[in-house]
Length: 370
Image 1 (spheres, rainbow, N blue to C red):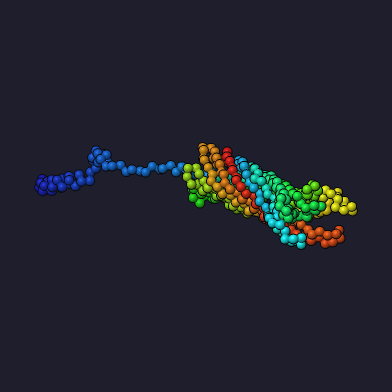
Image 2 (tube, rainbow, N blue to C red; image 1 turned 180 degrees about the vertical axis):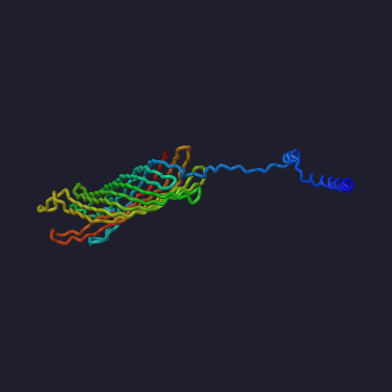
């Protein structure tokens, strides 16, 4: 019986063995073949991480640094209300009283050098910066006008000239002393890698004074000397913005715009004397004009500068060289007090000439980060 079952199952076992061989080979992985196939396939190219462009940190915004700057100023002071004489062009219409005729002669300042020095600390990566600056300028001006040579054509004063004879000449000397101390804080912004924007605010102290002298004299050198002085001491707030815009090749355009409001004390003094005795009862040693004026006063200023700069980054330092135009305008400071004359008990009316003061010219700056 066993033999009969074995003989019947043998063909079936042989058939299944023949069928299973190819089925199993179709799922068998040959390591050698896979290795050769892998070598034949091209490798996937993984892009390398490129370094940041050279100008990714033009302003060293992530470096915590101290900065020192020194500026040379070559400025001109401009004021109004400084006329001191009139030079007639034509002869007068007659002996009857007339009004002003001719060309006004005014005090003018000369171009003068000044300086500004400062130090700052930049706190990275919070992008706050603290600055301390001191600005100093001393400016002077000398002017003179002489009587024309034509008959009937005169030189006249715009102040009381008080000379016994027609005016032969007039001289003007003016001197300005200008000092500004700033303690500013700014916040650094990078709208794009080529532009640096600073929003600025802080405290400022201003002290300045002006002395103006005018002398009138006749052909015998008899005449009068007049002196007008004012000074201002005040403190206030400043706010504004500064920009640096990269153009290429280490060249930038740099600009500043700042507004300031101050409160302080204003003093004005006017003095006039003569060097002769008009009448026997007059005392030439006593001034004929001598007054003092004071008031608490607000003053306002606008500062603007614009020009090209060369800026260069090094491994541990940064250098800037700037040359541009700067303008500083002050309002509510320049005043010249005139008055009418009369007997000691008569009314003396006050006339005031006022104007803006402008400090303008070339500013060059060298800045070094360390």
